[in-house]
Amino acid sequence: KDLAGNPFPGLTGEEYVFHTAPAHFRKMAAYLQYPNFREPRFTPREGALFHFVNGSLLLFSGIADGLCLADTWVSRTGKEWTQVLGVESQSHSKLFPLVAHSPSAVDKEGCIWVLGGQCNNDPGTIWKTCDVGRSWFPLPRPTPIPFRGQVPAMFPMAFRDHAMTVLGGWQLVVVDASPGSSQAVWR
Image (cartoon, rainbow, N blue to C red):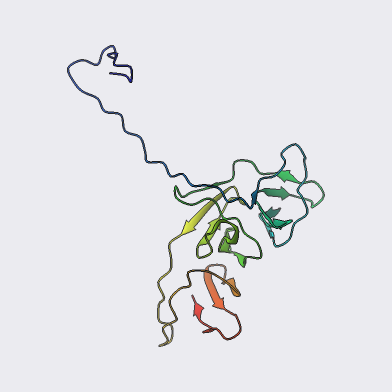
């Protein structure tokens, strides 16, 4: 039967149950600013993610006037920019990363790796995109593995004064570079 109690034609003798996936709702932060889609240009900002990947410049997120920006732009020349619409997270429980002053690196496949998401209360996640910022994947927390007999500190819950790089095109390395820190290295 449908929601009004009417039988479906051809569905007799059996009971059918309709299931929906659970939904996750959360209030968006008051300090989050979505772009003005009527203007075909990005606004001035600081701390944005900026990379040259697969023949395109990518400008993502950042902060303007104390507000976190939630927009993505690409350009082949640096003169003409196009806004990327439909940016999404590949997680049902996390919004795509909103970053400012976040360490990032590019691997040999052109995938961008980002530490944190300072503007969406998700500072301890490593994010990855392989399609120039259209879809983002949060990665599981790494397990510290001994290297040359040394066991690094537990992986941080948030990144502050950390650095990262991709060595040899494939090995992600994260370093706690803050003064007075453990100076841990995670590979």
